[in-house]
Length: 246
Image (cartoon, rainbow, N blue to C red; front, side, top):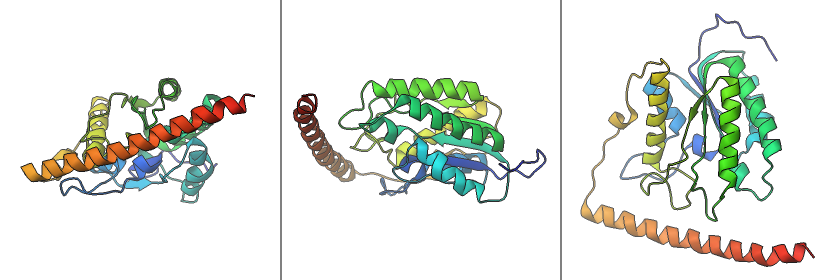
């Protein structure tokens, strides 16, 4: 791995992750969906470099995103952000030891390139069907490895409001991305970074009674679909599992 001179110019914020960090999606009351990490960069007045890819797991950060970053000239960043693990922990083949190995490697790479590190935990009420107790195991791993690497930990375990998280209970809404960014900025400000603007001050929107009702009905419809699909998957798995043990 190339050596990075301490006096090299800082290139802002470097982010690895999955679809949550990649951003993109539908408008919420006219507010565009943007990555929480991009909002953080804007809040800090820093350039943004993101390698997050939809559907990626920790092994993809190591196997794909880091090599993509290495194809750039060696550079240092002010802040490195890592939000990965949601797809890992929701999968049937969740392997805590394998995740730990890849997550540690991702943090090691970021520590070599960034002045500060920010690691993000997952909401406990994750997915439908729910990921369940595995999320606590994931978050405990993230917190332990982050502390070892000297990273700040952004705790999103309690993130779950309807206007912040989509009906799938996985992806943040446009407002959810901003809420995550503002929590991250609070944490970074307490650690000495200068926040130049609050993301919430950069948006404008208005709502009417009809818009709120339509939003509630749309959410309810999508939630029923997600819950129905989750129930079908749960029933299917419960029928298959006993056969696999015979």
